[in-house]
Image 1 (spheres, rainbow, N blue to C red):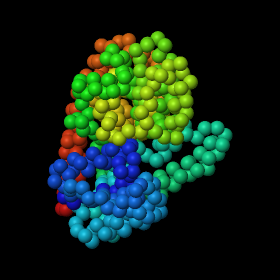
Image 2: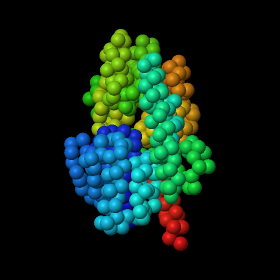
Image 3: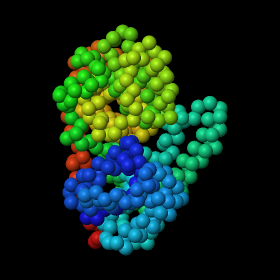
Image 4: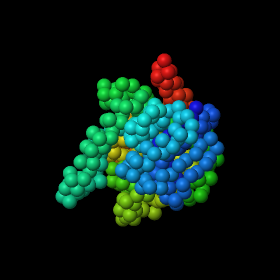
Length: 399
């Protein structure tokens, strides 16, 4: 089939959960022999077209990189018209609201958006980024109207016109199934051939990082914003470091909170045991997962199913995360991971301490998480289900 994909950002624009997700979808579809045409925003280096085996990516120079904008809405409509003139498009996949404008094109093919959550649901979590009195006025004057605008002008009209909505985590389904005609579940997945336990890689990475064989390594990774809660992970480590001299922390990522997070570590007498690695290519993450014992995801954000949680589980790492958004889709508490309350530093610290002191519990959870990730979140399984769901809709459209 010829499949068009509209995405406001890809891994060419930067590393993130949505970018990783859509790139994995590309790869799996291409391996099945489908031809992919990707339309996205301006390339950071000004590239106009990128050809890969089975896929062509068009970067729309007039659309600001990684943003929804009036320029994007106009250019994406024109891009679909060009694709239709060039040949058949069997259906369109949309990264969130990226294809919101193309449904207005005459004879638009069926559109299927991946949905990681609702615009209004992000308001409470994004509050963490707007501190102080000045932040309160900016939040009420800027963010709140913006989310309301996107909900009623773009999100709801677009999702009503979609042939089916692809919810990326279980908890989203009851929120939206009463409003839209068809809702399918299509999880964020993991490439189990890349993210897997590897004892040799573990030894190499630990040696390269100066980590001893018997050290217990915590790993934090993500975009460094306040709502991602990385400060909570660092503070938890600092509280435990004196009592557990073999405890170390690796921090991966970048963002506008990076300076304050590095300062938080530097102020601690245990700062020399915190290793900030900066922003790393996604291809390097398997090595860091193998070097780690416990992956922390103390997010305060209401988000979908984080790719990074599933990748950590598939790598055989014990996962400890806050109970927000779609985390429960992957983590069955105290079975495939540990869930703690959002923003509760005390609960987070106690949970880390339990995993440090009860290594048999940590190992049992890691083993169960590994099996769960391979059975439920492997990309071939997810894409097979996705294509079967879409085929059932397409068949109905053809009758």
